[in-house]
Length: 99
Image (cartoon, rainbow, N blue to C red; front, side, top):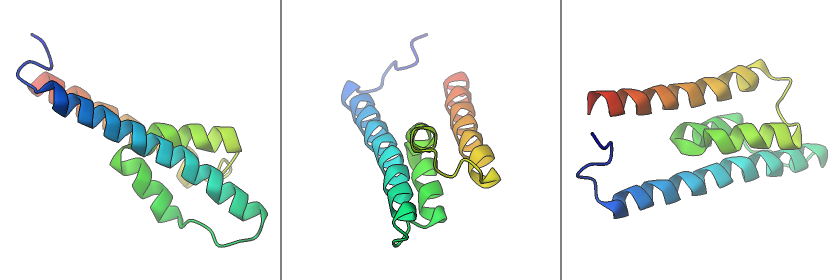
């Protein structure tokens, strides 16, 4: 059984585009927050960084954490971001299995 059976290809393309944009946003937001931390400037709130990850930017956020060495000493981020990604993967797998 094809997992995309009956799903419009435009819908799938839209979902993929959305995820790409959110992951870019997650990556960039980590870089911006790191730069602002170094400059002692206004910071992006942690709840905003987590929100971006939750709504689809978890991979970009994790890659941004590693690339910019940002929030890597905070357990809430080193455990939380991968947990969000794992939960998202589980939801996708469950959806595919149930469908």
